[in-house]
Length: 190
Image (tube, rainbow, N blue to C red; front, side):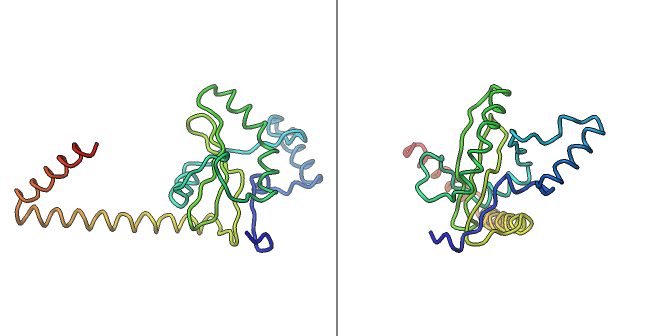
């Protein structure tokens, strides 16, 4: 892979505030003044938030191929691996807190968009560690592509349903015979 043209985004770069020292100090003072010390940035912590349901749905739609990190056989950029190293302790602590399921690292990919490295904590929480590729689309663009992908799948399903309805209207017994043959073949092939 040509690293010259590779764009990378990691979980450590997704925060809305700049993490330079002045902004961190201002933010920390603000949350302390509000009695919310638990929200203050701590130097030794690298913590991230799990993806929300929309983010999960979009990435699952656009990146349907899931490979465990141990079995992934392509280059992962150093910045993504550094981000993983930085948050791994936090993720292990999260998994231990909920005490269910395992902590798994996976690369979700397809031919398009670019791959993403995620951490699955427990049964439901999924954290986006990083994504990389020649071009990184905005989440809004990815969201629109996911909608288009689902709409295309639905169009195919609707077309099949229309064919079943047409066949049923013409000859209900012929449709029943087709369904019976499907059931028979599934018995023989299972």
